Length: 426
Ligand code: S3P
Image 1 (cartoon, rainbow, N blue to C red):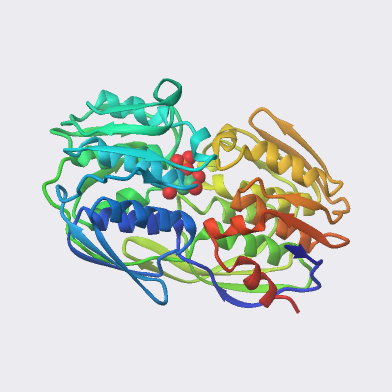
Image 2: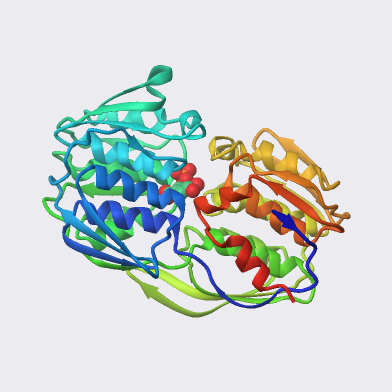
């Protein structure tokens, strides 16, 4: 993909559905009674992996034009063993949530994914699930895919998460539905709570008390109509692009603004961004708004602590905003970036260095000296969708043309990304 410097970005756009919410709507719909209709489903490769796995588990899932999906739920005990390996592709959410769900089923399953998934730590999920009674075995001392899950009767636990991870929390919540007794999960910091909100929408019995999440077993979940809001993680590229490209104004319609995900808006505001939310409303327990950004002079900032889980997926594009800002930006407490689709501390620093800016890798983040000239470069995606999309934004404010190798990785979470970027160019 070739990215040319942009003069101005203007227009009103709608971005694809939220990835986390799309995965969950299929999964929870599959174990609910009745037909769950989903509107605004994200048809990116990750969510299609989830659909594929649940079809292999015996669930009828019909897809329609305009991102509509129907999941024919079979109830909590309706999943059937798959004769095939459940292939989760590049999707950490599919892999980890399935581990939780399959732990308490009355059959055996096998899970595997692509090269990136085979490197991502699963031990963090397997360890507490094993405490609940699960039987999961895999490579590297039961830490890596491929994994074999032998369904077992489960019991509740009280467990303090070693990392603020929504995938880990959600895997335990899914297992807790099948446990004989109550489960308490204690988070070090609050991670996204889409599972809690949506499971309750389907009739589960989950409540939060500060950083404690309590879940009681349930006998039934009930099908729902889910309208998926636009993904704030996808909107993030357009927020940053609209702020750093001169003479720009972008309206991003229908963006999910769940407070566990809006760290990007808080940080950009802190950096001096002209960013506003209009028309705030609620859809299936999830808050939604239209986000408006206008070109702004940004300044460097410090990003750390409890903010990190609220913007973990947006750090690559925040690094681009920081490169275009005046002054220094320091990102700390973000070790989790090392175990994402790529080691995002390394990949972001390596790629942004190519533009000539001064950026330094640290053990738990990076330090970016902003306000220097950004040169066009030959960027590598490392098959990481968020690296490809972030470097495209950097290319918009570069002095000359850039190239992105492996740009098709954007299809993992954002089919049509480059087209949408192009339509805004004036
Ligand atoms: C996700 C949780 C986050 C995020 C990922 C999607 C989810 O990971 O990075 O892209 O859908 O639960 P963590 O499990 O590290 O929070």
